[in-house]
Amino acid sequence: MAVYADRDAFIPYRRSDLVELCLSEGKLDRAAAQQFREFAEILAAYYHFEFHRDLEIIKDSFAPFNPDSATKSIRELTTEESQERQERLVHAFEHVLERANYQPISKESLERAFEEEALIELKTDVQFDDFEYFSCFCRGDIFETVEVKKFFKKKPVTIDVFERVALLMKYKDADYFEAQGAKLEKLKFTPGKFYVALYKNVPKSDLEFLFPNVKVSMTLKDRLTFFVPAIGAAVPILIKVLPQLLLIVGVVMVLIPNVEPPDSGLLQATEEDAQNLSRLMLTILSMLVVLGGFAFKQYSKYQSKQLKFQKNVSDTLFFRNIASNASVFNSLIDSAEEEECKEILLVYYHLLTKGRAMTRDELDDTIETWMEEKFGTKIDFDINGPLGNLAKLKGEYIDDDGDPVIAPLLSVTPQKRYRVLSLERSKQAIDWIWDNAFSYSDEAEAEPIPAGRR
Image (cartoon, rainbow, N blue to C red; front, side, top):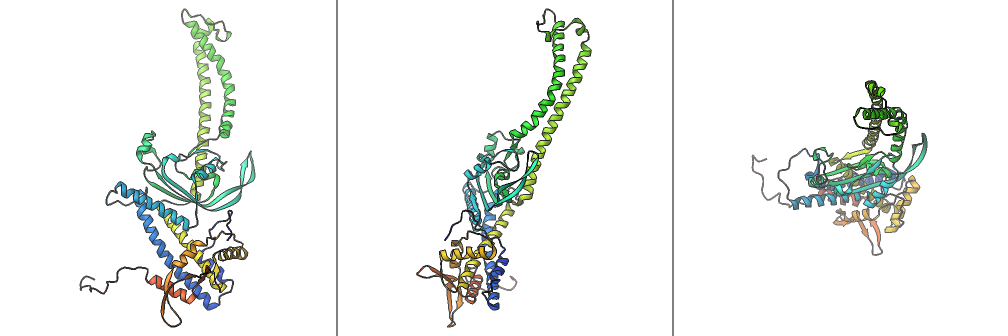
């Protein structure tokens, strides 16, 4: 069983399309093909039900920490209950991401990515100390070629891109931010709450822009580009103003009794200069107005550049954002549900059409080779998950003697080879599982409902 560092476990086809891709081989006749479609349909219905339970657990755990909540809590949670909810949320979130074929990104990997040159040329700073908890997951590590403007010319650059990025973070309580001197009413987030986000097509070097507390400023290159021309334009004005300012200083020294001006010619002033002080002040004032206008113009340019940078970041996040907070869970649950069904269908189909039992490694390599040769898609198939899921699906079917038998859809021989039930028996078994999804105590016959209570 090969392991590929440069491949993803994600299967890039919709479940319904994958069913048709399997059937397009023609290994199943018309009747069997219809049975396979029906098997896939009831399998999807069952897993939709199973993942709905996970969704309800996540929603219930997230409710006390939801910054966008529109409902009220009937009571305040104790510290222990709050901690229990938080741990349950984190565990469920990470479990769903794993089932959706996402991979975790460590804090160390994030910090290394932050040091890379980003497409958005800004100096950034993310304070991880602001978080009580955070985790980052990605799926689909690919390379894309984009055009980047370098020295007034566009040139193609190959960048590392994550097709999906999921973030879960909890800010520390208000006391922490007050101790840092922050004004709570000016914070863009609510302390003590969880924030969740799902993004698409994020360059690895731009990951820091996904964090709500990222601080941005101009890079050294941008500062030089801004300030060097400003200084160059200011120098001629200062050269014109400086002699007049020195002359005013000299006049003031002439007017002050018992003060002898220094021998320096720069500060020498005559009685005539003192008599023309008003005209001199008017000249200086006009020059200061010019200098102030220039300074205001440069400040406006600086503000404009800052706004341009902020808009660049906002546009990037807006067009890459898929979902935020509670809506993220629905998207991830749907993705995990699809992935598990697709993996099971691939394992089931290949064991069914091979007509013989297969080892774990043989089955894994068969599926990866089939995906690459038939559809040009390279994946690192996760064989352990679907084998475990198929073995857990135990249902009742009718054997050749007409007797009911309860058995798993997948069985393993003493030689560690796997085989599956036939399509007909698999349909019966999973239909039985679906019918018995709720295993409440069977006391419905104990007491009839009196008239008027229906």
